[in-house]
Length: 250
Image 1 (cartoon, helix red, strand yellow):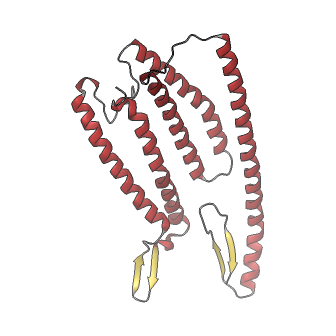
Image 2 (tube, helix red, strand yellow):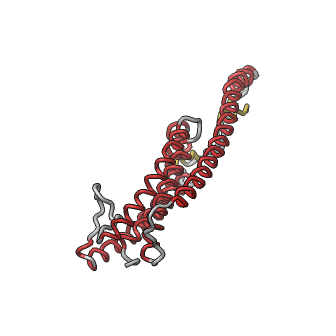
Image 3 (spheres, helix red, strand yellow):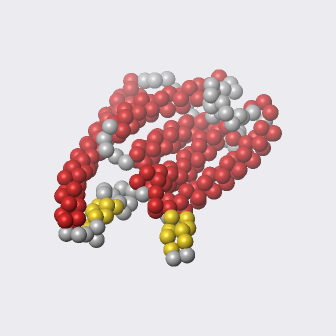
């Protein structure tokens, strides 16, 4: 039963999220280039103009697309095999009312799925406020997307771990006790402290980033004016996805 595709769906979802990460970075880079520096896509030579296939973002995008297509082909073959061998537990590509990994074949599996879903809910209850906090501070949007993908990965890890423990014979249906409440309280305090430390680090980095942005906004216009007064050419560029705008006089 642990080879049932329904129990492996969280692992497939995790693999898909990992493949989405480089695709996300490449798309963000490409969109930024389209908006701010569209001429980067073309190379002008003595013989004419050609498309710049050497851009890292284009190469990363193409490799990511090929990997995702390959992933879907492998998954589709596995999906067809499962439906052929298990006509009563068929899976569907698009389903909204109940994901395929929620198992309800009997009362014990219903309880296991219920406990797994409860843990996932607790994860989202803690992660969503952190994601909302990340969105109000000046971080690059790639970080927000990566954080969302990481939450999805942890969600599927939690769910798979719960189901896997049941099929490996290590699952217990113990009733809640005072000791369990005490252990959960200690764990909750550690999680809260960890989140507070992470939020403090993010806030400190954000304040530093804002200070850098303010300094650049104040200094670049005066440098540009001085450069043009001297007959130079003002060039504003950004070396990477994470760097701030840099000014050079040529």
